[in-house]
Length: 226
Figure 1 (cartoon, rainbow, N blue to C red):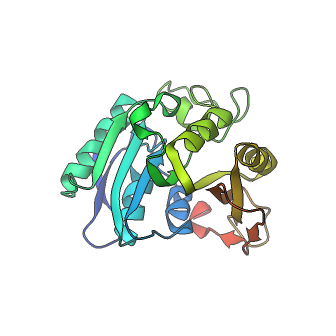
Figure 2: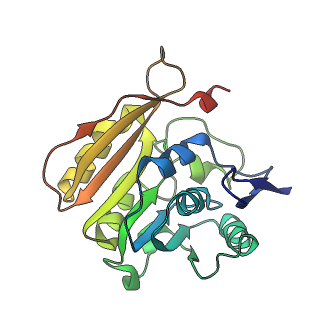
């Protein structure tokens, strides 16, 4: 069943489906991890129902346009409905397409890409019985390598890529970025409680950036355990 929820930012609202994959607080952490620059051309990879792109737009001035890429037809449709609900048709485009299939028209298009991808390897983690939910959690239709390849192609030189991922895959993420000339510049682990080990990591990389990573204090995401 579809419901309308407040984004708790101004009058913005988002449509969710109670029987399908719903966004988590990690998406909000990602949207707040980076600030917009003037005239920002933003892409939201693996956008789901559109929470990351919408939240980032709502909290930042200077965003010229947001393009959301989502492979699942139902989630992409909800994303479009949310755009219409908020009267943002001039600022958002929703593409129902796999990230690795993004067309040449988007090559070196974006100054910022945001992505909350599937966290789990194909043979690991919780397997949902719902075939529509599993690809949102596991790398069944998009691998980390494919994601980074597409990000490299779609980013302008000097453009930024911000990703949230599992903490225990941070080495794989950083190395994958580095070999593609997406140089990690900022890193922050996320934990549900201060005394617990991190469960996720936020990483910001710059295409063609110089070496050197700023490691921020661990973020305590109380909503993860609420």
